[in-house]
View 1 (cartoon, helix red, strand yellow):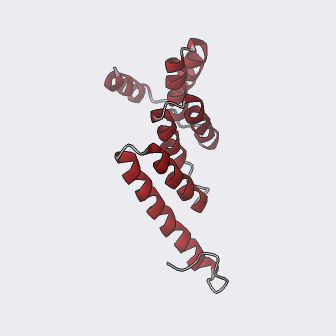
View 2: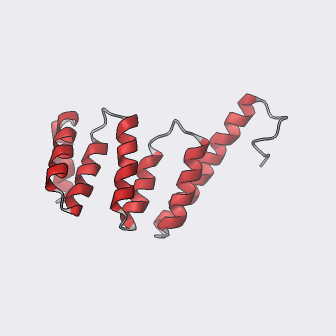
Length: 133
């Protein structure tokens, strides 16, 4: 693949290459994730995000790598970043509530769960809860 920083590339080609690399990095991250190598998965998800700062959904993948490594504060940090970028999506505060619940912080878990409940279509959140428990 050509070097993205090659001055001979025009802006359109550079953007295309960045998105192509992003997809490669996401796929590599997914492979490592499926093989439970969460450290390597996180590395490639970070690289993917650096290729497309507009795709904040990558924060969920990064958060999951931290969650599965038992680093709940870092997982929550990335879920909070997602919540800032997409404040109307109930899934971000829902996951933040879930992490607080695991940590035993009932007050914060309740706060974020209520926020998720305010944002979520009622039937969707109830279905999620039914599938979880």
